[in-house]
Image (cartoon, rainbow, N blue to C red; front, side):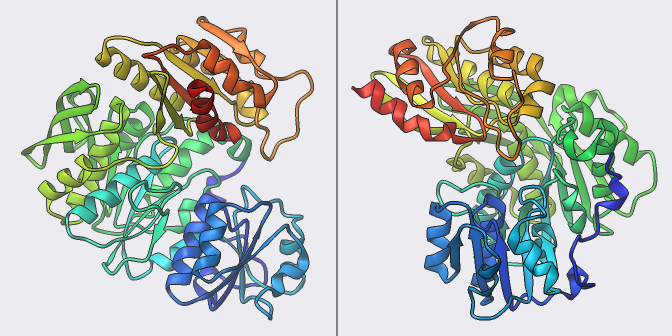
Length: 491
């Protein structure tokens, strides 16, 4: 089991602590990843020299090259000299890149400090007012809405997001203001490197147990994160979530150097009377285009409109609104910014309509996330008055599929029809005798197992009828199929 008390320090080599790191010449292993590419963009914008490597080319890497980075496809020790000389620091994600990576091995042998992405992000946030969004689910959407809201309020925050803002077309930006908005990733405890002024915890539900070893250790790391908040700062927690509410009650029962505030629906807030309330949803109306809610922030009423479907998105929007309010931004303008938010790539992302069938793509890869997405889809279909929900789901990781097979089946049963793809193993090796059918056999609605990836679009198109909504769901290659399904429907 990982001790959360031991995960806050950098795992670099060479005796250099993160706050002593020289960022003048940075090499990034896995530079094309969502989090890593964002850090690279900000480093480049600040004038640092950046090189990197990744296993495959991507739009992110093309954009980084255009911005001045030198990137090699494939990992090799000689990549450390892409800039002509050895880097002053090597940056990587310890959760995604194995320690025997040849570039990491070469860096250690040369005595070059190897830092986590979070360590570098912490350095970049120095001298800024850090607004961090944490939680098991909803970090990317909430962070994105916070950025959109602050921009509408006249701020120009720096930001680093784990997804691409649809309107901005980027996942990171070096702003001119003093606010820095970022996701705080708990998956390997690395968010303990940060010291925010305002922090949000959307929810706490056991995940990443392959790293933490136990639910207790996973929950405890969020408490440690709370202790990182600056004196006089704010911790904002969702009272509609059991795990976040339990942490809120635990913290308000003791003395802190920061303020604890809850947010949520009226029923969620009333269920936890000991927690001071920062914002509450009094009522909501769902339409085919989104949700309109009467919310109260610091005793002032506002009409909050959220175009992305789902009650979970309204809660995320309220968290973004409250955080921006606590930073001193104009609350009415924050509300306007959220109303104009048009989403983030792979979060209920609309791809098009063909043959009367709407097609969306979503990153959901945990049972709670799948439940939220399919519940939102059912609400949208119900508001339309006709149609069915069809989902093409690709499980992510063998360990997660085995651990949560019952929960995945229950979540997927919310759809009228399910097309199951093979498991996307990512960093894990296949497990003999385990495939997506361990979920399918427990699904109570119509389901089909399609082993051939290329056959999925035709299988989905055969099921879909005019008025239906199709969703491609998962953290792997399933995202490539949304447009293929549209073409199949069109033909």
